[in-house]
Length: 383
Image (cartoon, rainbow, N blue to C red; front, side, top):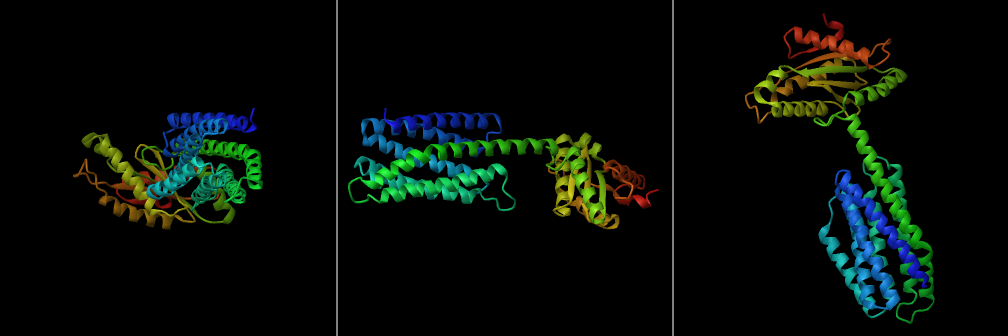
């Protein structure tokens, strides 16, 4: 049996497994667009390997042309998925033009049986796509995760591999297949299985890593307001308190809630209440700095950890929030006027855990409520 057919069979089954894995991930874990694009990419690869095997076995230019078109589609979908995952716009028009040109060129080379030209056009286009994938995968505002780094490396290796194919094919351009074809086949046979499978494994690890991150976020975040929940606040507080003690810097906790929230729910319904909670959470988040922490403790109660901030400075920040909350609009309750009360406590030497801070901030919040609500109270001045 032709060794090329054996390699193609291996790659076909690899594509089938990858298409199935991506399909399951898309169906059962959020139906994310980039996972669907990668699943479709591997489906195109499956068709490519079938056409490729038939083209080699039958020496059929039409089947080789179909394989070339499938390669173009598959590679393009990989880039589409990477850009979708990164939140970047997909240049559909540009991809349609360049992909169409590559498909036409590959089809023409296959039909006239020009192996040198065929070995330059499609691998060249795929190599360019892999470079674009690596560039699009690069995170702009954070570090690579371990799976992303592996994926990035595989894209770079895939681009170098395609460049080697183009270079070897170019050796025979304009002449009969000779040394260049032999080198091309050697590179293809030795490098393609490992590069292809490695890239597929890296893609699966990225999807799995994204799923793990999504699950961790769901565990630590409140689904309604998208801020941390109590568990997330507890975990963040351990780090914040340790850092404050290590560097000898202040740390303030604010506990706050909406005044008359129960009446808002009873009078206007839970949708209006949910809108009020989301608006309050957004206002709190916009009022603090990047390193500060906002969390929903439960019901209409929120907690904020303000790093490198003493109680007086935290109270000043909350005064601005208290003044701004009256501007929050509730379409479902246009006559409602939101107010909030705030209790502030500062980290002390004897505080062993977050609950120590919460107890004092709660006492300050109770004091603010007792004195008429819609105010900020600091624990050391609370009665």
